[in-house]
Amino acid sequence: MAEKSKKWPDNAPGPYFVDDQCIDCDACRAEAPDNFTRNDERGYSYVVKQPASPQEEAQCKSALEACPVEAIGKE
Image (cartoon, rainbow, N blue to C red; front, side):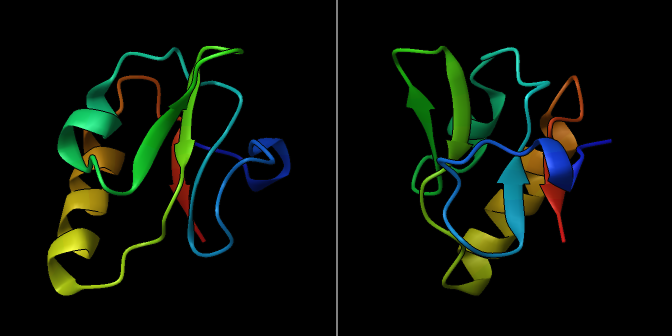
C-alpha cells in the first residue's frame, strides 16, 4: 500500500499520489495518460494532474488498481 509520507514531491496536490515504491512499469500512464507522467531523470511515475471529471476519476482508480507494487495511493 502506498504511503503518503513517502510520496514523490512531483505529485500534483490532491488525493492521488505515487510514492517511492514506483518501479516505472508504465501501468498508470497506460491507464490514465492525462493524469500520470514520468520523471525521465529519476525513472518513476507521478501524478501530473488530479482527476477533473468522472472519466478521469475512473481512469485514476484503474491506475491505482493496476499498479503491481501498490505505489499509487488515494487520500
